Length: 530
Image 1 (cartoon, rainbow, N blue to C red):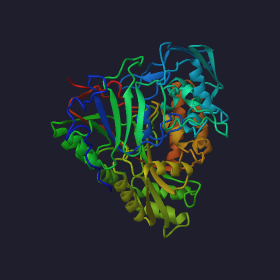
Image 2: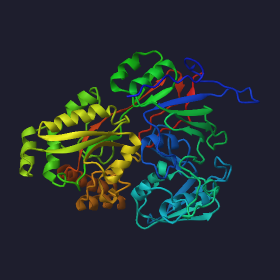
Image 3: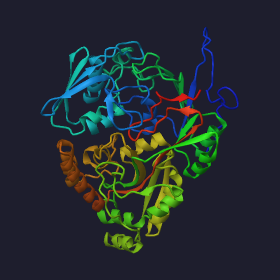
Image 4: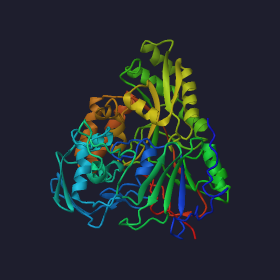
């Protein structure tokens, strides 16, 4: 793997107060904060991205109508100052802030909100450029969006949605600038020519400055943000794929913080007087998906055999340095809606018997795909893949390893090009729907934009998951989620592997940083100790 040189922004190491430079004609020092991340972003249009590396950046460029409280899951007013729902739950009216401008100077208003949702809803909209997986997954009941005044907007649903308000806080619900989209006119296809995914314009606490692919993304503080100017003037995201290179650069001061540390480095980081470790229980799951529309994984006995072959505890020891807990369902134990099921124990004899019964007494050849990027749920992709490969080999399943660069891997799994694939999910919404419906429902097995990469089409699971969206009674919703998890455990389109706590490592002197249990990374409150 390529080694990355130290990032020398000013000198051999950055001071705790960060790199200072002078703007032309100004004597004011500029405070820079550098975040070391696992991989580069794929795009910066919040409506079309699905990967965490992109969300990390867009969370700071765009605002939604609601936001999360600092480091928590409680929703607070943001671009909307208040809202109310009709008695039947089918209409939601939001009152908007009147003092907000986009980064290009154009006004934020109800028209911009309508534009931001209509471009996702309407395939003929001139700004409907890309694939809108999150809209398709989360807003099936959204029938109409309309301005009821310059600073008021109404959403009309076709049916009640138990978590509609939470969806308003999704990163994909960030409000975009209509003026930016329209600034370069339309092409021959009737779509706007402006490359929004490379030149994003929102209302967020930071403005887009530049993007040098695989080198850095630079944002600058939005001094006019309605919640107040950030304490840092410049925010730099630097992709450093190698974990050891990332921690080395942090120790040297070339970056101020990093995500996805190697778990075996945490003890040393805690002892290092230059560093601090931040930890929070993980709302995530790492899983092995089997493409249920491709033989031999069309046979439930084969999928169950794979589940019996995998030793999760040994996987945690070998690829997670002993950190993490075995996952039993696709809804992590930290999340509301989780069902506590007694998991399968590794049983090679049972696995071989199931394979023989399915017509594969000598096993079979297949492929096991995985991406290069470390994630909170997958800190060591290669070791994870190797351990799973070894477990499968013990029952006669010969899996060829297929590693791909992160953005290419995400695209390939969404297209269903894999046979078996290792992936994971980190919560966007504090609700079981965000795991079970998004990852396991047939609605989300769309080739080209699939989040359900097992392409599982179970009708009974679909019935329960759709019902859980429509009913408002939490106890009734819970009943549906528990029933769906029991079926998924038996059908085994995926093998849930591990849930792991979220860890970040920061330089001492960095303050105001929070790990959010759901959503993205937010740096509007980050500052340096004086």
